[in-house]
Image (tube, rainbow, N blue to C red; front, side):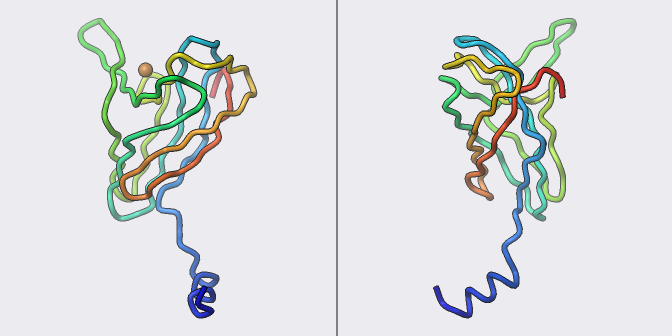
Length: 135
Ligand SMILES: [Cu+2]
């Protein structure tokens, strides 16, 4: 690496544009489903988009939203979550969440799981979520 670039890098480390706070998931059992939650903090001026989540814990991983129609409450897949510039987006129970379907193993209280979040601007972000019953 060029020495000048190395010095510049030390003086001005690139700031993370997207920060993921408090990732957690609910305990569940093999072959069943569960959900992953976290807060996305967008420090950039530009909007960013979460469009995919990968995990070895489940056979299928989808981005979901919760909706209500009359007295019915359900959830459905969405293709993306847009986080406006200089704002936060919270995935939480009863709202948006990451759905983990057909779990490959039991997830017990205190277990940790690794996930890769894919953003259009920030690229891949690896996170470790902890399993707990309540936030
Ligand atoms: Cu769901």
